[in-house]
Amino acid sequence: MELRITTLIGMIAFAAITRLLPHPPNFTAVTAMALFAGAQIVDRRLALLVPLVAVSLTDLVLGLHAGMLLVYVCVAAVVAMGALTGPNQLSKIAGASVAGSVLFFVVTNFGVWVQDGLYPASLAGLADCYVAAIPFFQTALVGDLVFTAVLFGGYEVLRRTVPLLSSVR
Image (cartoon, rainbow, N blue to C red):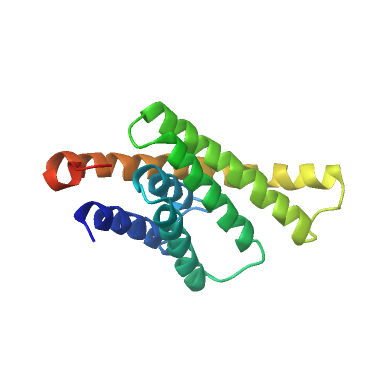
């Protein structure tokens, strides 16, 4: 496997491992690594597979739950956002990171409302579910932006210092 792909996969694996370290609720690298994979890995199948495997493996350690399928759907959608964004436009990358955060918030909390029975099956119940999740969204958004900056910025530093990484995107 070429150095560039190995480096990208290694960075995504390292980001996934951070899920296993103590962190504030929802302050994880999931959205960032999906965005990074989509933007940086040219082979679309590999770009989708790497973050899904990384999240799945860490989920085996963290515990399985009913909403996992929705998380994986969001990961796939964010990989697609990354592919559309590309690797080098800071404003597009930041915007896609925020969009990914919003997507995860909307989809996964809708899943909580539908599946968990914690809220009434009404628009008011759905609204209550989203309102209760706002503090988690705040830390998720910050985490997504931080990890996005670390992955994209870290790779750019590596790319500039290791000439072999500067080959074809």
